[in-house]
Image 1 (cartoon, rainbow, N blue to C red):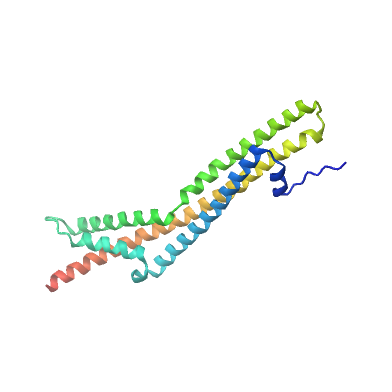
Image 2 (image 1 turned 60 degrees about the vertical axis):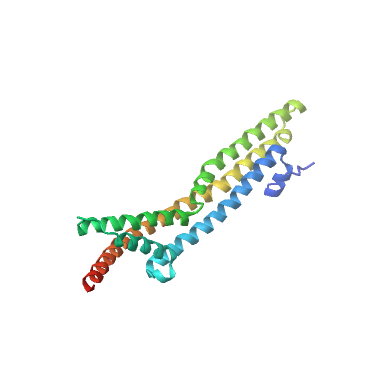
Length: 210
C-alpha cells in the first residue's frame, strides 16, 4: 500500500510527534514575529531617510527633538569657552539625543539577530529528536525498512526546514535594515554638524542684536 506521508508543511506538522509539533509551533511563531519585525524596521528606516532627505523639522519629531537639544545646549553659557568648544558641546548634545532616537526607531531590530542565530539550533533539536524517534521505531518494530524509518526522518527534516524558514529572512532582514539605519545614522551625523553651526551662528546674531 502506498504511503500516506505528504511533504506539505501542514501534513508534516500533523504527522509529527508531540515534541516535533512543539518545535514547529515555536519556529512558526518565530517566523511570524520575524516578518513583523522586518516590516516595522523597514518602515522606520524608510521614514528616517525620508525625514533626512526633506530636513523638515516641523514635521519630523526626530529632528525636532534633536534641534531642541541643540538649542538648549547652545543657550548655556560656559565661561572661557571658545567657539569651537561650544560647537563640539552642542553637537555632542544633539548626537546624544539622536542616538537615543535611533535606538527607539530601530525597535526590535536586535531581535532579528536573535531569531537568525537561535532558530537553526531549535530546528536542529527537532532534527535530533526526529532521528531518535526513528531509532526507537526501528527498535520497536524490529524492522529497518524505509517505511518504519521514513516518518521520523521526515519529521526531523521538517523541523530543520522550519528553522531555516525563520532564520534566513531574519538574517537577511537584520543585515539589510541594519545597513539602512547605519547609512541614515551617517547622514544624520552630517546634518547635526551643519545644524549645530547654524544654531551657534543664530545665537551669536541674536546676541549682537541685543
